[in-house]
Length: 386
Image 1: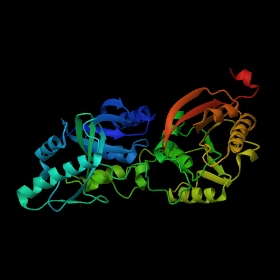
Image 2: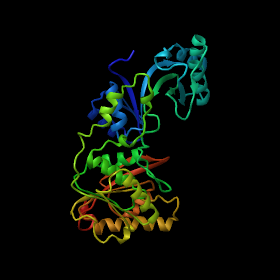
Image 3: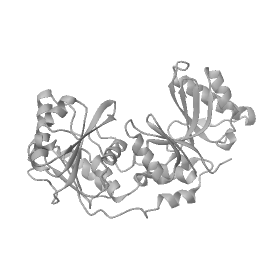
Image 4: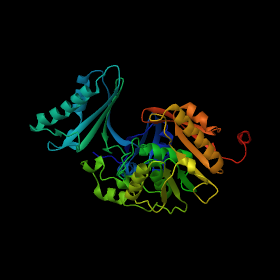
């Protein structure tokens, strides 16, 4: 039976757990506990829908339905088969299993997934003679089994496709920034739209779009075509429509977001993505290398700059270090009064900026351990900055 409040797990990226916890608290979540790349919480069905639609830093929202201990796949089979599967599926339904294992007992996640699938199939076959089919692309129910040593948690994935796939992106550059990471970076700065925002190396425009969504308080999930919970047997379409269409929290943005890039193709892609998101009126885009900035693009004396420069995979060391020297020089001479945030992963690159950071936050970009550094750009010499 459906209970009013139940446990859930929101998955995120390393370094964004606190931000996600704050988002969930703002939505009304209870019993918040922060873990590694995840936040556990309790709430009702309305909160589960809101978490999927509104959370900027969640990758997926899981609903655990059974926790047990096992050291063999036969034990997993027995535990899974115990569950009342008619509450969730019919013989005509489709399902898929996603297995994640961090265990000395289970070294092959695929075999765990097979045994979980067998238990569900046998449950129906023995009772009806028919069984649900596996559909890995678009299942009616996406089931997650997570194993840490001998602790097994079986959950239903309410999101489906990762929530970083917002739905507004119509094109991308070679290495686009993950939308969840971009939103998390901006939220870590504390900026919520109180000033102009600049990204002088904007690529496909992810930071610009996520900044506009934050500034206007637009839910990132409104661009999505579907969520996995829409296929669940207990799906409440009226409740979901009410949450999905609620724009009462949206607000005006009185400043401007400026983006530029040296690559004309990247700017074309960014323009397309911004248009797709319906945010062209508050984002200004230009083809322009950062070294050609001779004045901050905004008329305001103060603003925020957030950018993700190249890290070096496609640049030789001399060009890479020259790039970061130029970033430091432009920050010092053009963006006085600004707060600048730079994401990169090589200490040598940060050293070339030549400015003293006031904050360092560890993040992961793809598989790279990075740092997100804050620079407060004052007039005067570096030693005067403290």
